[in-house]
Length: 200
Image (tube, rainbow, N blue to C red):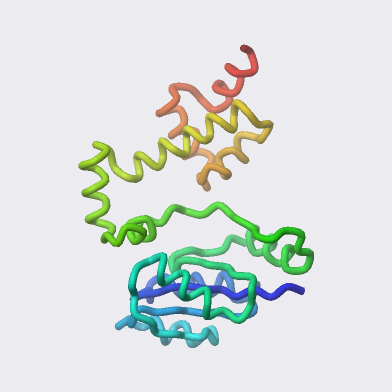
């Protein structure tokens, strides 16, 4: 069976790290936490999960992530943010992949993390949001929803995926929310949109 290292970078994550580790501990073979010198109970919580807790100076989000990966003992890496949680469905998929690996790598849908996006350009989340709105005249999350709905339109017109599958593929965990946002931006329901393409 393939072995997987869970790799997480942290800084003062005591509010979220327990949920994250609890969701993954049964599907990974080691937990590696690279921490930017937290001052809260992050280290204490990680120790309950027998995590290897490594303190390393933060020099940028990408740099820290890449360095953290080099600390893993196994070539298969599951990289999570401290506020991310594996669903039961995803855990089953990971266990299946461990016992019957047929790809070089796997991906899964995840929530877009504002802190991570801002970190890519070394800005704080609040500064990034202000900068983004000044440059685009819309909020980051409004822009993100527009991108998701644009992708949903493409999938509805080009694929045979069900509407719920399209919603999940585009990052919506709630089908009702997807329907509301789709109708708001496309001025019709997802099913009506698909039918309009099938009737042309």
